[in-house]
Image (cartoon, rainbow, N blue to C red; front, side, top):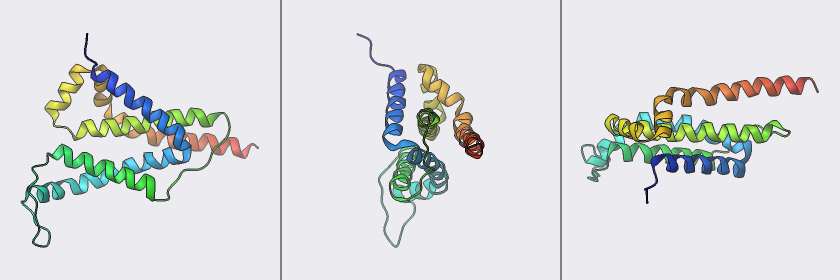
Length: 172
């Protein structure tokens, strides 16, 4: 019996992302998407210092740790913690929508947000490991090889739908 591939795992993550988007609705999935961008910035800015602290090479008020946590683990923990905290506790939300476009928006924003999260996690991996994932999984290769698009497209879609929504509301 063949073992499941990474393609299956990635597809399940995307399906869970779409289901999560339907549960949250558009305003929270947009907030989650924006939280991903903030989390990327915070992760890049703080992961080196936190890594040094966890390795014991930096101290905080005479206190230090020696956990031997990998840079990947530290980055993913920071990234997911910031997303979770901002999405759940920030009070940030997108605009409420109604109409035919709303279910389509939810699916699109859910896919783009999930792709941004999965792609970012892949980019926290060492290059050799990332290349191995890309070689062994078509979906991983799609996400890894087009990571720039996963970062740019959510913003483009958000702005584009804003123009479409504004144009349709002014004609009412």
